[in-house]
Amino acid sequence: MATYYSSLTSTNFGTVPTATPVAGQHGVRKVTPRVVEAEFDFASVTAPTSSDVIKMIAIPPGTVVLWVGVQQLTTASGSGTIACGDAASAGRYVAAAAPPAANAYMTSLTEGSGAVTPYSYAAASDIRLTVATNTVTAGKTRVVALLMDVSNEPGPTASWTP
Image (cartoon, rainbow, N blue to C red; front, side):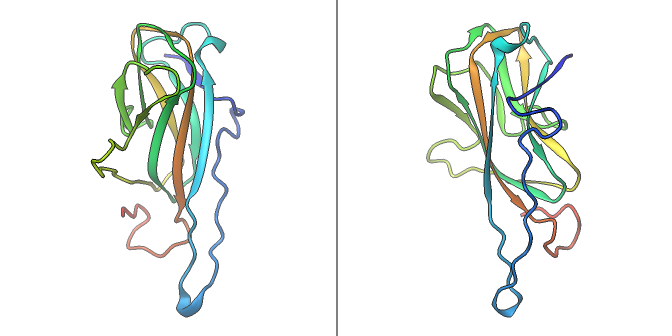
């Protein structure tokens, strides 16, 4: 299994800036979701194959991932499928599927379903693409995530789940 990195550097790939709580009236804090995105060109490496990983967006501890989408920017080549998830679950956000046509999305939200399951990270992790089957030899892919830093928020445990 090989590991590749998105268009950002391997030391700072898609890092989410840490939010500083802002005091409001009656002790209310302002927590702002952030949109983070990264791109990967499958043609930039030698034929990623089954189980290869592309690390797309770094997730710092204390982050809740609210939504993830995968956009195929240019037409993919090869017979492979890709999934989007993390180290614990390759398909946590988008189950393995053949890359769609150019400018189409694979997403964690099915239109009209309202089914989004946020996921919280107590420890640092990353959102990654995994080549689930066969080989993907070309095509540029973007991962977009809606993230929220809750590391400074009070909660019952460090692994708070909304």
